[in-house]
Image (tube, rainbow, N blue to C red; front, side):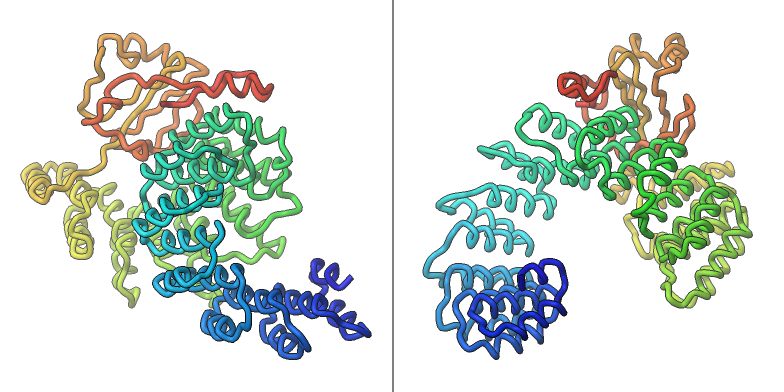
Length: 558
């Protein structure tokens, strides 16, 4: 009964029952200590612990583990030293606590002193090294482990990914004798975070092909994020078809990821319908912000403002991210007066801290409206040192409106803070070129070349008959005489049902009624041969068809 109250977060009822108990054994005392710790009442737990007539090793371990979890390492050390008897759980808890708080060398000393170790002890030390960016030490211990379990492999892979060693993580993943959903999801998430979303989708396809491991909530969220990054509507829709056959179809986090995916792919009506129906009883500020940001991304300022007003009417308090989305919506829709009004409202609301993102949005708002002088004066009058993002917003405005004098001044401000900013050199050169100042433009390009700076090129792709053709500026595709983007085939390529996207050196485009993000994230490299030829396609369709999930074709880039 006592344990039931604690599991139900009814700590007051647990206290009352504990006080009424005529006889209390060590289990009762331990349960009460654990209950206080679970509710964050550390001092009360100490009081009960001190009152205990007798303690066993579980009593000590309960207190020790709780102190470690809430970051009270010194108290944990003092308690550890007082323990009359320590078992492997005691030692492991101390290793975990020290490593988690950055004291990994102390953790190793405790680990080395352990009279016996189990696989959990080894995993704790390996994870500690990985979390503290000591990958060589972590890998050395991993290699020396007498036995490994799935947590050992997953922990090492997670550590490698967190430290940017994705290729090493992939090699280790391929060596795993057995994989669970955590293993697959960790790799998928790693690729998404490294802006390699196509690889993430390929890993997901392999996971489904295994048929032994079922995706979980985290898997679907990461896969939908990959679809969002690629503006892959077809892929996202068919992942959605997979989700509706699982228990995760009502998961708030999965529904939110679906809303994000549909909005990034330009399907705002579907996104809004899911927001209205799928989250009707579970909306929070984050979900409202996501929908407002979706409208902002697609320049639907009036819809964003309408949703913001509805949010306020339903007594959801906006936060700093809400105003970033709202100001961005006003900026992208040319709604200068509305944007200024909401910015002033933000400044008056002392409960929300005004951030650089808000300043950058306001500068962008002025700049898009051609109010470059007002934007510059706003920055000067800030009273704080503006971030690079604030100056970059103004430089973009100078580029759009061809203001050479102000553009030169702003570019200098940015380069003083970040001398290797290739994008700034490119924008300044383009500003000169737009006004016919070719000599000045050439000087900027030459300076950029002398510094060894290169701007990431944009790329275009076109999908024709289930083949994706990717192009970068000034690179001729082999077999150009068969190129589907030649003038004689372009018309058929852009027929209904095809996806036609261009993003070279320009803004987002709207083609075939569907909006796609600029494709620079595909990291097109003119020196990489795989980008100079047609992409072969690996099919997830057959896997999903075999499971009865989809009926339409689906391809992923390989």
